[in-house]
Image 1 (spheres, rainbow, N blue to C red):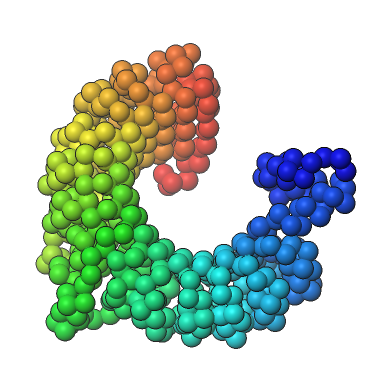
Image 2 (cartoon, one colour):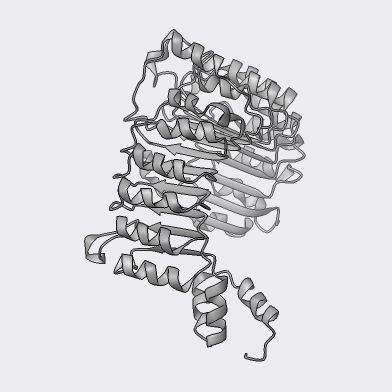
Length: 467
């Protein structure tokens, strides 16, 4: 090993991806141990780090070129030892000068005081905080002010963040490209306006509201006007995900939807007030759209908006079919409260979209309008490779058998479908038509019935959902 050329030794270590394998190789000889210390760029640590502060110093001293660190205490209990605290974060900032990416997950002992130490990490470009309940908006602000290169910020279940000055500061910096805010109870849709010019820099936005604890903030006429006056185009936005968000006419996120000219992927899940006009405006602007996922609220789950129709119809599907020629993935879902007679999308609307666009992946959940006739109509879908059906109770064995006529179908996923049985899968046994078959919680399909129906299959059956 001592005679091995330096470049070859580096290449050997470079090809080893698993952390456990890297650790084993580095113990085989002093030379590889030294090279691994120099080459290691990332580590993931958590409950096994004890005593946490001292062990972290040891690791950072050994791996001098660390750029990415993830600290996760998911599943932590007091008997596993103390967690990393504010002092440990101070040590981290002092011993990792090259740090660019930091993730703190379930770090319940870290407070704003600890987070302020990260302001000295001038290279830090990505910070992800996942359930850090003792960190407030002031702690986030200290990082934002100190780290001028911050381009990625994820805040997930940070329940103590109630101030939004850090959003205003990020708006002035214009460096942020990836923002994720999930279930931070005090942050509402109206606060996002504070990003100002940064809207034009964002590539990816994920905004999810905790529906059970959300702050129902009142919007007056002045607030609406403020959105319109301060608005800038979202030319850089590529991916947008909104969950449990309020979308109202000429207000906030409704403006965002019609400003994303280069959007490629959008996910709208249980967004209150979403209308055909929002999706039509999006389709006309976003000709590069490749993926869309819509989960629609039931007609009876949101009585506060009964004066404003919230159901989407075939009009928006038709707009997507006419304007989004690059659309490859479509996911349509209805909430559990949806009744068959109130399904927003008709069979013709869904089929028309799939046939007019180069759809490779189609997922339907709780879509009662889709039946065996729809399965037959999709025989002409020349690009369709993946079909996922969940709680589509109008599909029978006859419709499933038609799947064999699809020209490119390779993956089939069935979940909680009552009308299909082993008989529907029998034509696929030994045919090698399907590469992957997944069956979850379908009461009439047995494990024996899926065997041989695809090159690879997974089967699970838990019928508790029926009772």
